[in-house]
Image (cartoon, rainbow, N blue to C red):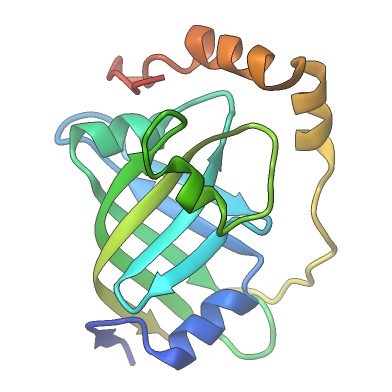
Length: 179
């Protein structure tokens, strides 16, 4: 039932665009494997071999550390509606951050979301679909508002920079994140 692809075909792009949730898995050569759920209007298919998404300020920065340490990444989408499907994107990622020359160009692709700390750009090397028969059905109820309230309490972008400098400098395994 699993099928591999070399590029993001139009039907796979359409599937990605319908999903409200995706998961990002990364790992350094040694240390913990990280798996993070992501949501909101934060993911873009750039072309048939490139995807990008916004990474927001949070309590940890494992993805950033693992990108710097190794760069390997898997992104997974799974449908929770009537039509079951799982799609995994395999590839290598890099960070684009404030101060990088390409930062404004990447941000233009997304809505302005306070707290964005990097754009993750992934070069997709292969893709795989599978049935997803074991994934339960759920209904999408909407986005949460807690993140926007948390960002507001931090005092804007200056407060978030200070938070990242204090809390996001190292991964849980002690790897540098670049923040």
